[in-house]
Amino acid sequence: MSTRDLVLVALFAAIIVALGLIPPVSLGFIPVPVHAQSLGVMLAGVVLGAKRGTLAVALFMLLAAIGLPVLSGGRGGLGVFMAPPSGYLYGYLAAAFVTGYISERFVTPRQTGLVQGSVFFVAALAGGVLTCHLLGVLWLAFVTGLGLQAAFLGTLAFIPGDALKALIAAFAGRAVMVGYPLLPQRA
Amino acid sequence: MNTLYLDGQSLLHRLSTKPKLGGLAVFSVFLFAASHPLALGVSALVAALAYASTGIGWKPGLARLRPAFITIAAVTLFALLFQPPIEALVILFRLTALMLAAAAITATTSIGAFIDTITWAATPLERFGLVRAADIGLSVGLVIRFVPEVTLRYRSIRDAHQARGLKVRPVTLIVPLIIQTLKNADEIAAAIDARGIR
Image (tube, rainbow over all chains, first blue to last red; front, side):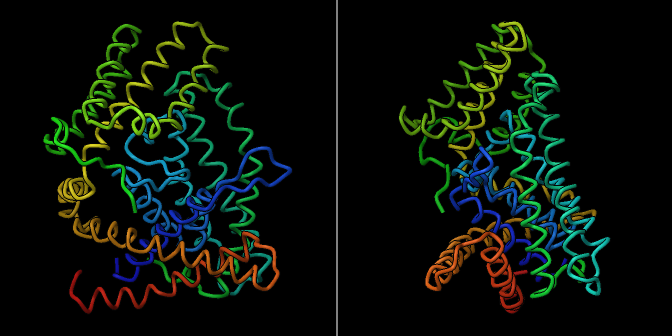
């Protein structure tokens, strides 16, 4: 990995941290406050691709693990990896990989904006919503012993907000692709 | 950036990082293997004593764990609805013990000690050419250095919106934030290479 890629990974991890410091926005029609941090995870995949995106999220999680309060709401420390909702945190890692993989596999600079945007949206949905929630639910169900059905009910409230974030990630991914494309030059 | 490390001289502070992390791993395996409420209750008590021994004090100690306790309470209530009460008690003790033990390690291990241990653990991976162990510490340092910068940039983009009477929308905020930040990457990489840090 080149020094430039290392710096890109570190800068993106810093962006994910900064997005967690922004106060959550209530979107009115969704009852749950929307945190920008999982948006940062989708963006990492969409902007940097599978390898660098996953590394950026891994670095972000490492910062949390060693006791820096980088998770939204100023949380951090080893405890956040062993709590009932920790599955979503592990899900971030898989989410960045899936989003990044689909993005770099199917998006090329020559496609029209609509095609690029749609592929980014599908990628962010598959990674940031499907994969992340799947791991979150499995962890919640088996680690806490709640059972799959109850855990699934608990996750439903967050799906609309996360789908909206996937849409934002798609728009932003397309705009970054136009302004400063990093996806085609793979790590 | 503030850290969750707490200066002190307790037994856990003096213990080196490797046995602490190893101990935490063994403890968590034990917690998931055990299913008797009494054993788990004693474990939670031991973990609470360990956390108290860091000298953190009641108020800051509880303030730090508040979000964790809220989720544990929510899960326990949920379990009470769907499962027999003894199961809910097992869940409550197990999760509380985990949380307290992890918080005790976090409060007594400095960022530097963690990075040293991670670098040490990554050295075998280096032999396979998977990762350069020294890169991990460098990356962590870079992130800590650039978080204030990104936050500042976020504020100035927000102010620029407001100065022009525009509503702050996620897309118009995030796109310039990403592009401006990542455009610095070339300069920073050149600076790192020029100084022979890597």
